[in-house]
Length: 276
Image (cartoon, rainbow, N blue to C red; front, top):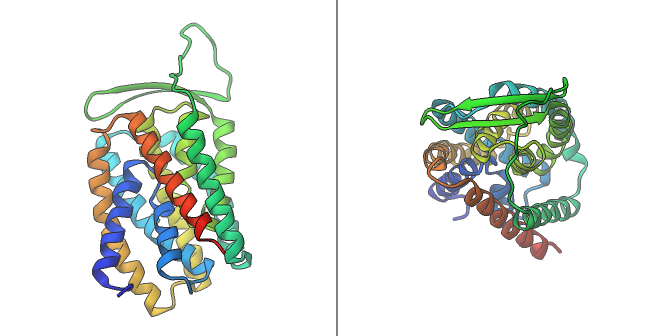
């Protein structure tokens, strides 16, 4: 049965594990699975379920990343604050978007992001030593629990702008935003990969909880079948997130980027080919 408790649990486990490993929340995996397994579900129901699981995943993963001391809380709080207005508007917009448009936009976005991550040249940010910084630039030195030190700088205004857009798009697509935020943090803001995945998860935890609250207010979880799906998927995602965070520091940054790109491409193509 499609709505088997164990099947939903395993899906949640995989979503939580891979989503946390690459800092993307797992919504980009769950949405196409729901589109495939539950063709009768409307976009607003799919996004409501997905955002609830992203919230479980992100909160669980954030706890694990906090223990590893790889979250940039100062940047995360700023970016999370700017995702909230867009997130609220995005949730409200889901009721006015057709399933057809939903699938085309989602699939195209994932394929484009995959190509960008696979084709981009690898490079490292160099922070000049004897150069002054304006108010827009923030410099970070972060040491995690294992003793590894990360040095990086970023333009906070660009980060705020990205977060506003991510906040709006994420609940519409039901993907949590990590699939967009992680590449943005790495490539446009020059965050180290492992700090980007951890910080993205922290931002996701804040943003997804806000989205879920708005969905609750709108009555998106009143159906008993949807409640059962959220519980089964959520338990799996919480456990999977702990495993994903545990293995994340054992995987090289570039490998995480490639895994992210391949995952994006496969899912995006599947959505576009399955669209009629």
